[in-house]
Structures are given as structure tokens and as C-alpha cells.
Length: 431
Image 1 (cartoon, rainbow, N blue to C red):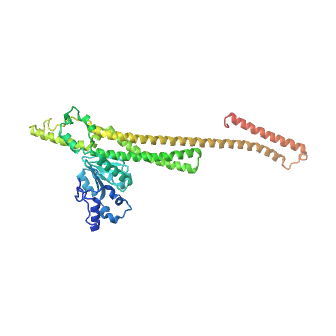
Image 2 (tube, rainbow, N blue to C red):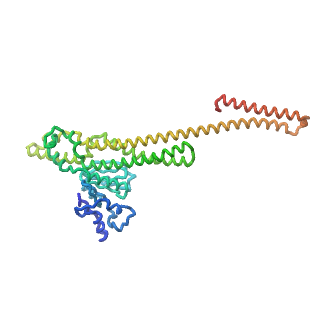
Image 3 (cartoon, helix red, strand yellow):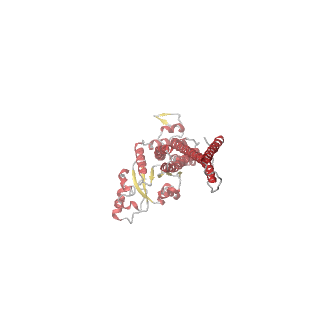
């Protein structure tokens, strides 16, 4: 919707207004010419010269708008404008605030005319004909916008075909000029999925790829660190593994959040139908048309057939399911990698604990042997102390008695030490 959003720029000065007019490329002023998004990369950087972009840094939030044809522009819109035009709520916009990213979990919220997406680094509002992306200063968000532009530019224009299909019978489709018996359930694989689902697919692909890349980097850093810790338990290696484990815990929480979110959506068909905005819009138009036809046919409003909706089918939910299921498998694979890495770290910790226990047991054995040896030598010292007293027993001058006492004490100490060691071995205190 070019020109549908406005900006408050009354106090920005002539230079700032001129710069803003140039940057927004007509999205605010009704100019039909839109400049590719890549030109504005430098102006979105935090360290860029703010004098060049002027009013781009006013209080109103900047949004990158990407249309169905892949053209993009930078707009500024206040919260009231967004809530009025897209049907989102103020609390939904708080979820998208980059400054409050840590306060709100990842979520995909379906509203009447838009989808509010808050997944990792991507925070956007998806409508049926355009998408608004915030936090465009992030390089990963810039990469997402570029990929979205490329996908939209390469996608075939199916607006006319979808309009013709919606105007025809909901149960019969004409293909190649011939009437077929294919129902809408079998028809949707041959048609392009709606724009909002294409954008949601790019969002999920970007998030899943980003998390998978972080997981691969974590695995590449974890295995050498764990192997080094296994070979040598040192303070450096322990600190290295501790930092890796902290990274893994945080990443596992992020991946698990996305995993649970997609799993919850896949388990509820109503939630998946709500994500298909185009189908809801066509259903609403079809209901209004049926009510008008009922009034023309003379049916009273209280009649059971007045505005009766056609039989509900699962085609709308299946379109969303095809998108979600693919990336659920992707994120599930990443989640399994993290679980495997967690088990590997736990096994390494168990191995290190066993090694440390073994070393402690060896120290205890050495202490036991030294204690037995000290006890045996203490016996010799006791005998030497007894004979070293200043007592006159008429044997101090006998060398033979000295040899007998010394040898007897030594042999007795050795026997006592051997007896203690044998007892410890018998009780399996020593290996």
C-alpha cells in the first residue's frame, strides 16, 4: 500500500525533510518509483552519518516495506497508524520492539488482516500484499530482506489466476480450457501459495538456517575442547568447556522455543487456518456474496440457508501445514543435534569425574601405604627411645646387644608393615 503510511517530520528542517524524502523513495509521499533496498544499507547502520538521513532518526519507528513484486522502501509509521491500517494491537507492536526483545518469547500471532511475527532476529508484520520489517540495522535482517526481495521478484504473478479461481465455482476448476473434476483440495498444490505464506516461509528459512549455523559453529568449537579436556584436565580446558556449555544451554533454549512453537501450530488446524490470511479474506468475501444472493432470492435473514457458508475443507490448513512441516523438520534436526551435543558433553563430564575419582582413590592408597610405613617406623623409634633413656642397666657397653635390638626392631617393623599391607589387600583396599 504505497503512500498509506505517514511520518511526523514537521520539526526536522528542510535538509532533514529532503533526506527523508530521498530515503523513503516515495513510500510516504505517493511516488510510484521505488528504489531497491540495497542502496539504503549504509543509512541503516548505527555508525552512519546521521546528518545524511536527517529525519530518519525521529521518534517514529523505521520500517522496511517489501511489496509483492519485491520492491522495497523505508517508511516511518506510528503505532496508531499500524493498528488502524493492519488491525494489529498495541501489545503486538511491543512484542516487535527490539529494545524489549528479551521480555517477549518468540511468537507467530494471527490477526484479522496481518500476521505478527517475532522469531529470533526477525520482527515483522505480514499483510496480504506487503510486509513491514523492523530492526533493519541488523546484518541478519538485511540478509533476510534481500532474500525476501529475491523470492518475491522471482515468484510468478498469480493474482489474476487466484482472482479467476475465486470467482469460479469453489468445487470445480477449469484447466487448459477443459473442465476437470479436481476439487480445491487437489488443486492447491498446482497454484502459488499466498503472499503471506511465502513471506512466512522465508522467515522460517532464515531463522532455521541461522540457528543451524550457530549449532554447527558450536559443534565445531565443542568437539576439540572436549577432546582436549579428555586428554588433560586443566583449569584452561575446564574454563573452555564451561563457556561452550553456557553457549549450548542458551542456544538450546532458543531452538526449543521455536520447536515448541511450530509443533503447537501444527497440532491445531484452526491456528493454521488463521495464518492463511488470503483464504480468510476470500472466505469472508464469499460469505458476504452468499448473503447478498440470499437476500436477492427472498430468503429471510433468520433462515438457516441465509448466508450459509460452504462446507469447510482442510485445503487452507494444508497450505500452511506444508510450509510449517518442512521447517519443523529442519528445526527438529537442529534440536536433535543440540541434544546429541548435550549428551556428548554429559558423557565427557562423567568420564572426567570417573578419572578424578580414580586419581583420588590412588592418592588414598598412597596415603594408606605411607601411614602403615610411618606406624612401622614409629615402633623402631619407640624402642630406640626406651633404650636411649639415662638408665643404668649394665648393657650399654655391649655391642652385641645393640645389634640384636636394632635387627629385632627392624624385622618387627617390616613384619608389621607387611601385615598391614596384606590386610588391606585382603579387604581390597589396595589393588
